[in-house]
Image 1: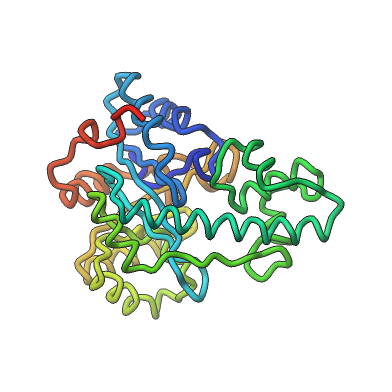
Image 2: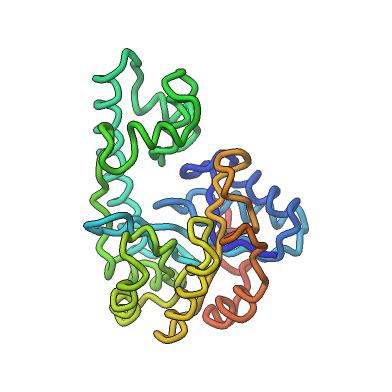
Amino acid sequence: MIDLHSHSSASDGSLSPADSALYAISKKLNVWALTDHDTIDGLYDAAKAIFESKSKMEFVPGIELNIKWKNGEFHLLGLGLRTLSKELSDSIEYLSNDRKNRNEEILSKMMNATKIETTLSELEEKFGTKQIGRPHFARFLVEKGVVKKPQEAFDRFLGVGRPWYAPHAGEDLDVAIEAIKKSGGVPVIAHPKSLYISLNKIEPFLADFHERGVEGLEAYHPCVREGEAKRLEEMARRLGMFVTAGSDFHGKGVRADRKLGRSAGDEEIADRFWTDELLPVLGDWNWKKTAWLLPK
């Protein structure tokens, strides 16, 4: 069992990077990727925790970048990062500034509509991250008694088209592809259904992304049915892309459908997505020789 898509408190997960790594070890994963939103801040602590535990679990340092897109959301995974290039550092800085502006807009809308008063700095301190996102606002609204569950916050206030929603600017796709590759990683389209393109019409878009340098497709994700995942895998094969699978795990109890090591149809993620798919693309891979075990 493996997992090639997960998050820690370095972005919008509930567990620290080190605790995320130890949790993956406790679930007996053979391979685990940490892919926080628009940051690599958790990679060192995760790598250190795995190294010191003497676990044999393979670690895949990664990132999930927000991409400029008109409809839905376009997220690009960078898997197997070996170092932090200037190009990726620049993209992270750009996206972090964009995220801060978005958060200030969400916060303003929330405070104007309620009697709640707080600041972005207070939320960053409360959740222990500079990468505040909508899931943090949702958890905050649960604590304040505005909603009962985080999903209710999205359904009523934070989702696309809801009153407190604010859009991302996003990074240019070609810039993001180059940034990932310059860092030794492999670009993979995350949860393609979030692009809001029907499966009957998505293949030409995937072909275009592949021609521009995207190498993989996350066909298996908890938000797709097994039949849809198989169709996406078939498309990837026709286009010459490899296939990945992930849980998009954000922490224990955060979302019932996101279980570490499980993906579409609540099925265990098979080792083949590592041994037959990603590993051959990474080539001479040894995560212990990447930059993430170097002292900060």
